[in-house]
Length: 166
Length: 281
Image (cartoon, rainbow over all chains, first blue to last red; front, side, top):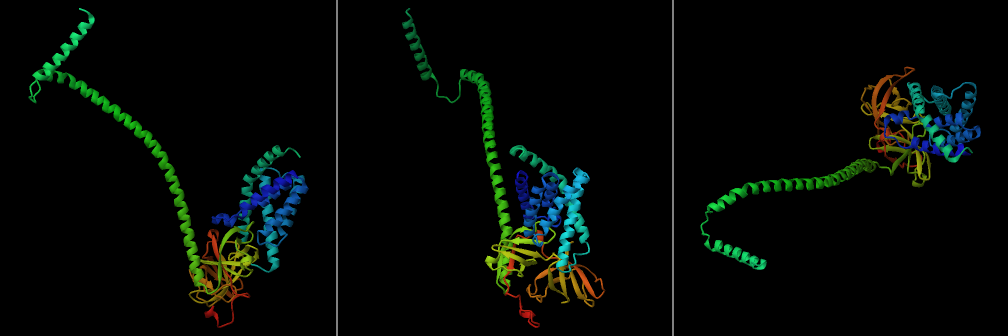
């Protein structure tokens, strides 16, 4: 419950930032996916039930606020939470570079799933340099996660001290 | 001699002396030698005193001025800040005014009913190119309606709810617009692409397509009215199969800077696309 409330508050904040109209071309083109960073954080830090619940709700909301088919992001995010938990149990990904690489991979996986879903709706040509754009966007998200992850940890520590262990 | 008698005598002597000097002094404007000696003794002292007094007074006035200047400075700084704030507000209002005026001109130029809407948000993730506006089904905005700004085509409404609608932007691969090259009148279909710009496809091989050519809507897709600016040709190449030409088009609209848009409330079912009626559209 404690983690769920925290994730809900931080997720809402991230969603507001992500959907606010930007006045920058670079931000418009390569906006990082803050929700995905939170999903990976949840996969590594909070109990599975809280993490999965957050991933599902966040995914549904993101689906509503993007052009994706409803439920697609909920599915992707839930799979990511489960994958992160499992991966961390086998390989230590919970370190500075490990987390960045995980987020880079997660963004690529997310892009692949979204574009595949789009392509199955009807053949689309995403452009000759689409792969480069996707890689760049994933790189930006991974890079931003290096700053966002410690920030979320800091908020989580403060929140935990405030509400106690339960 | 008692003390009181002595005091009275002294007072009388002094008064008497004063009266003698008063009545014995000449009316000549020239001062006497005694006066000259007195003056010459007093003058430097007077000058020094005057100079000191002037300096002290100047210093005091300067200090008072400084105190005033300090206060004035604070007041002026506050005023400058306030004026800067006001200027910013005026500039932003002026820019908004110009944008709205352009939109109103565009609205007046259209023969179709239209609606001004404000952009409230953008796609949450960015894998799709969408924007959200503050007008929706309650205002008569439905899916399929064209959205423009003064600079050109923005996109098409894909979803609408009570007072919100989602617009698929021109740069999204999911949007197709029937277009013409303004100079040659060559037709093609424009699609967005995830990388920079859009692609104009299916242009006849014989077309004389050049970099810098303007691309406008043809009006034949039943969504966008004819003649709206779409963008400018950046480069051309032969398509993959070699049957058509392709052109990379840079949109005329900067999507990151849109604040208000015009939704064209076209007839349900789109615009009349019967051949031969293009000119009426």
